Amino acid sequence: MIVPTSYYLFLGGILFTIGVVGVLTRRNAIVIFMSIELMLNAVNLTLVSFSNHLNSLEGQVFVFFVMVVAAAEVAVGLALVVAIFRTKNTVNVDEFNLLKW
Amino acid sequence: MSLSSLNLPVVAPVITLSLTGFVIVGVSLIWSKVSRHVFLLLSLLGLGLSFWFTTSLWNSNTIAFGGMVVADNYALFFNFIFLISAALSMLLSQGEHEQGHLLNAEYFALMLFATVGMVLMAAGSNLLVLFLGLETLSISLYVLAGIKRTEPKSLEAAFKYFLLGAFSSAFLLYGIAFIYGVTGSLSLRYISNFISSAPLASQPLLLLGGLLVVAGLGFKVVMFPFHMWAPDVYEGAATPVTAFMATGSKAAAFAALLRVLHSLFDGASTDWMVILSVLAVLTMFVGNLAAIAQANVKRMLAYSSVAHAGYVLIGLIAWSDAGTAGVLFYLLVYMFMTVGAFAVLSFLSSRQSEFVMLDDFRGLAFRKPAVALAMAVFMFSLAGLPPTAGFVGKFYLFSAAVKAGHTPLVVFAVVNSVISLYYYLGVVVMMFMRKTLRTLSIPPTVPLIACALLVAVLASCALGLFPSYLMDTIEHFAVHLL
Image (cartoon, rainbow over all chains, first blue to last red; front, side, top):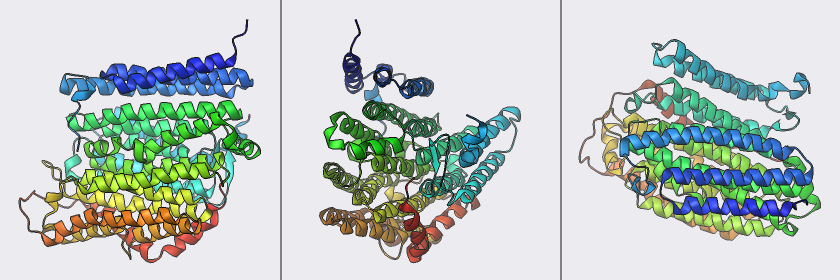
């Protein structure tokens, strides 16, 4: 049985939404970060299923680039988390409150 | 595909910048004792070479990498903005306050890599290149924002910028995925052909994709619902980085936004105009009203940057050649006056204390008359008073919008310009009409920052007095977006 493309798109949409909700509701920087990764992977799933549906390779190539960029972002992001943990001893975003108006 | 069909000369500005960045990192690895000025010199050399390559490509209108990258005059004009902004921001890093953080090799290398990202954003005519450019720019800027890594404020700024930036680029990506799914291509030219045969309104998925892309880029141009990061990041980051972020990355995002919108909408789609108009008005009001309440000049400039994004959006909404030309001119002018204002802050910040509060400006005219005068020019220009460049820029933007029949929008914009007078002139009043209360020590003059200041002042005045030379050229090519 062939699973229709729309199923994958819905799954991608659901994953993306879970990611958005995670970013907006969680307070731990690492969990927020994981939620963003979830959003990126939802996009990857969407791209691959479109690519398969359209019989074009462009979407799959794009996915590789998204993965590379996500990896680079993880490197920078975790470095920042470590640096900030050293000065503040917490990764709770509610306590990042030096800057506000 | 052979090497010659890649048409490498078209990306020569990008290659030069990347190579310079790598050379700087390499030099710092091999000779750890090398003088800090070497990096500045190398970077300026790289920027200069890239500038020269850009000049030599002028009017060539060529494409490279199978049409993924274009070198039309539109992209090249933006190159000039990015390169000048990067060069001036690097000069600012010589200030006394920044000694210790910003003179390392990684600062210069990251500035160059960020510039690479900007150039690719303006030159990319494929959503993939656009995305890669945006990420090259963003990831470099996340690190740059936190480059004062012992200072909690700077780290916090970097982290906020990083989380929100990554969040917004996920939206951009999702939008790109939808556009790809509906049109079957990532090439902007192909997408625009597809859309002219099948109007946008009949494709809900494409409309959603377009909205998500606008949201993703709106974050970078500091448009209203996505502006929350700007004040915090601008305040926390080192002043030279803030100057670069406020001018270069905003211009790059506008370059990309304009290109994407031009391929997604063929003109008369009024729904889009309504959405963008509402956003533009809200952006102006939020920026200007919040700026009034600020006591920190860096934060005030951040909110003013929000407001200016609103003014530039008006030129975009005009959707005409005059509007596009206005946007290009304004972004150039905005770059000079904003970098100038930040240069004043860099100039006056001593090793111990950053010169950023509004109260610090009290009586500055009696202590440093020349700097106070320069700051006054930037403030007048940002407020849009004649005969400065800011006035002419606003005039071009607003007159294009009036011609396109968006008079109510322009009325809002003018009201906002009047509101903005309050806080821009507030700085001038502090400098010239108030007595000094507490004296922050002002460091000795750094010649390189003085140079940057002079360039910014001259440009802000010259572009205001003789705008037509430049404007004639811009109007000539703004018509032809490849």
